[in-house]
Length: 134
Image (cartoon, rainbow, N blue to C red; front, top):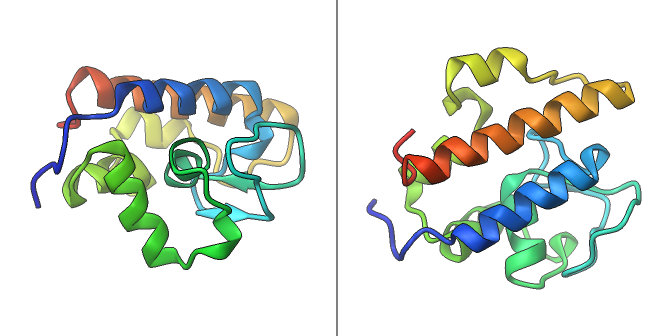
């Protein structure tokens, strides 16, 4: 599937910012966990992945009101990416090897969350610079 619209770089930058500002609220393995309020970035017990953050910031929806397939489809639309590009961005298994190796999937400490947030921010940066091709 081809990209459906231009890459939404401002939204990707907002996602980077939120992930770096609230690293404990990022986890690549969850569309969402808990309930992040639409458009609200605060420190709470909820977390989301890149797709989840795209919807919180770009669609102003409550993630708890959506099923997994809706999250994927809506996130692709709001980010302006097709299915292949979305896999490259959303799925850890499709990230560049060096980033996959640095990600701490079973994060438990503040340092783990910070490392994961930085790795995710790098992933988004590479995605932007390659126009979704890497």
